[in-house]
Every structure is written in structure tokens, then in C-alpha cells.
Length: 474
Image 1 (cartoon, rainbow, N blue to C red):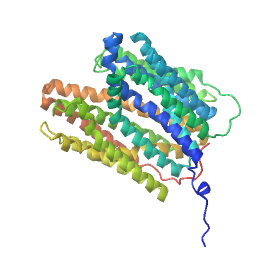
Image 2 (cartoon, helix red, strand yellow; image 1 turned 135 degrees about the vertical axis):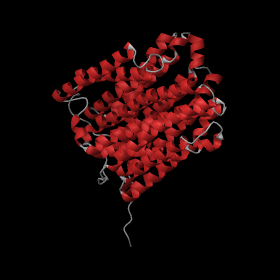
Image 3 (tube, rainbow, N blue to C red; image 1 turned 30 degrees about the vertical axis):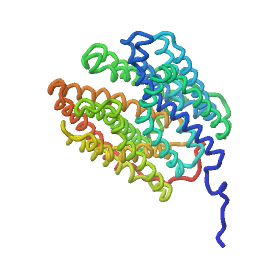
Image 4 (tube, helix red, strand yellow; image 1 turned 180 degrees about the vertical axis):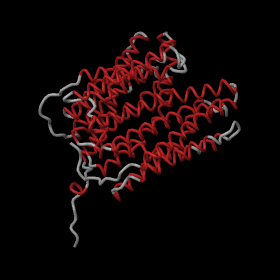
């Protein structure tokens, strides 16, 4: 008779671990959903608090704070108890959420949004680090497929939830609603997560933190404003770029001399880690192009109402979730992953090439089908970049590595939005604001995205296959 193994021994997904994973994913969902929910309420907020000219700062302050804080949270989680650091980030996020809902004026709301964004930076990187602590690499891909589902629900459901809350209860409830879910996240984490205590105190790299924040904030502002608020050649944009370059250069020199650097450059000596950063950057560039400019095409070229244009992204979301689930099963069964980013980059290239064939009279439902290969490609890339990062670094650098991966993806979103926005508006200026001009703008964005996808395909071909372990990272 074959020896049977108790479920508690054969699977890492014990009841306690499941509760801990639910807590981590709840925190990740809070960070993902917030941007999409808040965007739909901006007109109502401007009417209530005034200051419509400052309205975009509600989004910008949040994004800046996430970009600036992610790496700091990741490094803290390496030096301290990952569970404690994650719970602290949840507390900061919930405090910011409550204060946003209570804001009496636009300036106060923007400031509290920055506080909320600081907490969100820890939510995203902390949740990923927590998952790596709870389960071994082979099984962590199962969690990644759930993460893809959360991302898809955020893209499609976020604007719908934001609109419903704003219409039914008022815009302040888009912030208050975070509190009960955040409390569930805290309870799940406290009950379900057990991590070994770490001795010693955190050695904070204050100089590196200041320089990295200066570089990230300057670059994020430059990519957000270039081509919209200011011309690319304006003194403001050039000055921000100069500050970013100077701060980044000083950061590199400072980190090489720091005994406990914010970004351990030893991570980049591993080829897979560096390639994972390129793949993550490409993933978010493609996401920006898809979720931003395809709905504009549906609305402005095909006359689809804004409330329905987001629903036309469902094929992309379905493709992403299905492939993430399938690739997760493949990795768990075979222990191999190298082929997946190659296939993913290829699918993204096929999808972006398909966008180039959309015309001013293409049926919206037919046009939405280009999202299938795009979603399939993104589904291969998102979870495997995290897996490659995990398998490329030592456990002591896991938080910093995941923080760098998150920062790279954030910069990909900002830079992609700026460059593609310039291409899009340039095409509109030359072709007019009609359906043909909108389609030309979409084609310009798709062509640039295709180049990014092909570069990602080349990078994916150089990823090395490494054996997956069955032990969790501590």
C-alpha cells in the first residue's frame, strides 16, 4: 500500500496560511483598486471642494508617494519583521484614507492622498513579500494567478465601484470603504502569518533614501507633465530631468559606499534579476497603452459610452486571468518557467500588431478581441517577473528586490504614459480630432508598444532556467 501523507504535511496551504494569504491579498487589492476608484470621483470632488485646476494632483500625489516609498518599505521588510512592516503600511494607508474622507479643502485632500500613497507603496511590495514568506516558489505562482484576477477586477470594476459609491453615498465614501476591508486585512495577517523574529535594529540609509526619492519624484513629475502641462523642451521639464539625472548619479555613488544600502547593487550581478526589471518595465508600458488608449479609441472613434468602454477590456482581462491560471499549473507541475516570458512577449507583440489593423469603422466587439493575445501575454509576464526576481536573490534581499521590481514597473507606467501621450496627441494634431485622427493616434501608440514588446521578447530569450525550490523565503 502506498504511504499516504496528511494534507497538513503534503500541502503548504494550511488553514493558517490561507488566512495569511487572504490578508496579504486584501492589502494588495486595496492598493490596486484605489487609483481606479478615485479617478471616477474627481469631478464630484472638484465641485464640492473647489480647485478644479488642482484636481489632477489627487491622482498625482498618490502615484508620487507610491513611487517614492516602495523601495523604502521593501528594504525595511528585509531588516525588520516582514509582518510588522506590512501591518504598519496598512495602518498608514487606512489613516490616510480616513483623513482623505474628512478633508475640508482641496489642499488637505492632496496632502492626505500623499500619506495614503505612502501606505499603498508598502501594501503592494509588502503583500508580495508576505506571499514569498508563506509559500515556496513553486506554489507561489498559484497566488500570482489570484493577483492577476485582482488586477483584472481592478481595471474593470474599479471605475464601476467608484461611480456607484459616488452617486449613492457621496465621494467621501470612496475613502471610507477602505477601512472595513483594511481591518479584515489586519486581522487575517495577525492570525495567519507567522515569521521568525529578526534580531538587531534597522540601519536606515537616510542619504540614499533622500537621493532616490528626489530622483523618482523628479522623473515622475517630468513624465506626468511633459507634453501635457509643459512642452518637452520647456525649462520646467528639462530642469526636472536634470534633477533626476543628478540625484540618480549621486545615489549610485552613495550606495556603493553605504554599508547597508537601500538598493543592494549585488542583485544586478545576477543576469535574471536585471532581465526581470526589463520585463517588468515592458509589462507596465504595455498595460498603460492598452488600458488608456483603447478606451479612448472606443469612445472617440466608435462612439461607445464611457461607462461601457471599460467593459470592452474584458477579453483582455479574461485572457490574462486564464493564462495566469494555466501557467501557474504548468510551473507547479514541471518546475520550469523560462518558456513563459518568451511566449508572453510574443503574445503581446501579436496583440499590439493587431491594434495596428483597427480602423475607424471596426466593430467595437471585434476590436475588443485584440485584447485576448494582449491579456494572454501580460498573464505570462506579470507572475513570472516576480518569480524570476525571487529566484535571483538571497532571502535577505527579497524585500529590496521586490521593491525594485515594483519601482521599475511604476516608472514604466509613467514613462510609457508620457511618451505614448505625446505620440497620440501628435497624431491628433496632424490628423484632426475625428475618427481617423483618433485611429492614427492609436496606431502610433501600438507601433511604439510593438517595439517594446519585441525588445522584451529578446530579453526573455536570455532568461536562464533555474530549479525552483520547495522551501519558502524567510
